[in-house]
Image (cartoon, rainbow, N blue to C red; front, side, top):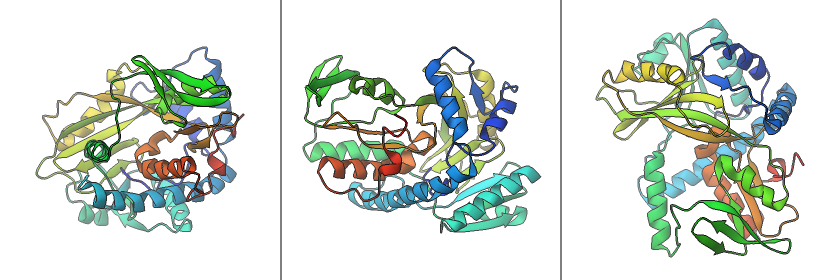
Length: 363
């Protein structure tokens, strides 16, 4: 999904309290595995400190600006790369409880204050907009600026275009560390040998924090495990991306496919799939594709403790830059993150003020 509507950072009021309630449910959308981990303890403490209305008020315009800049770039990229499944379809944020209604209407008010296009729908209007809806909904908020892209087609098109323009892609390699010459970066060490370069961008997702330690920077970052499964799109399937806000599950129609996703588990780098937490996802998938037996995919989102990405140079290490920490907004913010860091590498002022996203803001 491409979601400019998501202007509330992960670190927001009430998140910690709700997370504690969910810990008691084996099928809940959130899970924290208790363990002796100093980095996790520091991250949780910083996350809790940022769960304030003041932090949301500061962060919402920042995330809005990044997201809308990315939307423009997605349109330009699709014109350049060919069809990558991008469309500004709108997004339905569904609710079926009174608590969910209040929370969604508050979020809609904030989005409107951020100049995003918002429409509040009652149950009848929801069915008119999405006749294929098969889950309970007493209402929804429709965010017109949101949309979707096919990530597989997007990556394939990027790779093909870059190689055609002379870029060498090294795939199947594991980066094990940074190469240094004095204080400056000189490339990366991989399991297949060294790759030398005067500038390096660490965009290694949840693993970026481990690699940047070579430069002496502590980057608060936690891997948040999430699940998804993808089925062939049924003929009578939904047209609009949807989020079931109480269940924290998503439905994304793509050309020929329907993807379901959810769960946020802080379990370190343990990618084992918990059947109990996958079951709500499978139940949802079966409502649209009764024979859905697709394998579950698991992956880590790199989460910062304030819900904002890390974008910019690493102080004290000339030539080293970071682009990570996007949490659940990785695909949405990918184009503007790439453009912002590319301008820094070229010595050009970035398109946005990157100070709020400085990699050393917690140093």
